[in-house]
Length: 442
Image 1 (cartoon, helix red, strand yellow):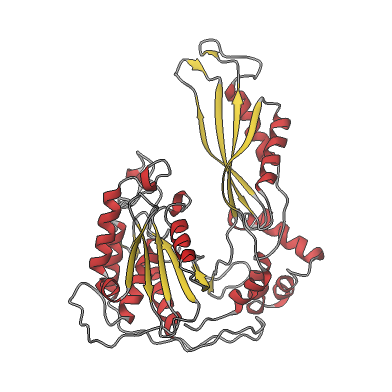
Image 2 (cartoon, rainbow, N blue to C red):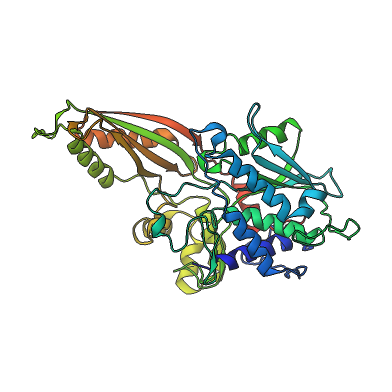
């Protein structure tokens, strides 16, 4: 894995390049597209930037779907936002910073607007979030450094949120600060010449992305819609920069651009049993534990259909020019169908590991098991939560039916129901073509 400190600095550099480079959106084929000349970024104190980022990691901004405002501790979030204002003062003084939240709740998300010299142009929205998932209680000692230490050591920044995705927040604010004339907490000189983009840029930082974003990102989206804001492009968190290439396809460095996200749903399976005293466990397999064992075996043995489709095929065809020999021929045929496409799909599903397998299939993962009332009582009910991720064009009903089939094979007494649908995914081919081969001018 690449150094986290280096990853952050690459993010800072990438945004500065995107904001200033004088290039146009190209629609050339991937075999003839040209790489723009890199822009020389303004001076940057890497050590100071990393210290500010490390300070951001130190705030345990854990989101919680069952709590008010979707956060564990409102004060921690407010203190963190105050820290951002102190750490990136030029952003807070020169740009429009709005605190956003649902009506009647604390405003814990941020919308930052950098008005362009041509505000009639559709705006560009950069999206990130500063909430993180919780640390499993009792596992703190297993961390190399404490999860909210923000420790800088051995070429890494350590802590929860260092990759997902506080570095996105810090990177955007750091790049904006440099372009606004400086960085850090020193006094802001109002007469310093600053960069101004042509089109308006917006930064949207949510506080509850890890638990659906319904209080943060959704509220920001509603606010923008109510104002009639038109967006030219939305830039959200994406993949990594693979310095060693995308093996086994190419050894050249590859920046993974996320152009879609799989759909998200939660399906619950409720098992029921007669119960009884633990001193006399059942012998006929009707108890919850036996049913659970059979059901999980059936789920493991069943497979969802394997499908190689956009946007994965778009990625492969764009990587093809940077490979050689038979690999180029193989990847170039990813979109054409037939035996080559089928072979690639099987390689992704069977031989590439869990990362590639998830690219060509809907997935189901057991994430929670709830049941039992006492140590000496056989449970009469258990609820299993399966998190499902869906390929573009798939529906949650497909996963419900897959679990119902597994229940039938396992021979268990169970009810299957979808309980949460966060989003479904649909992909427009035209958008993907532009996103994967285009460079935007701001």
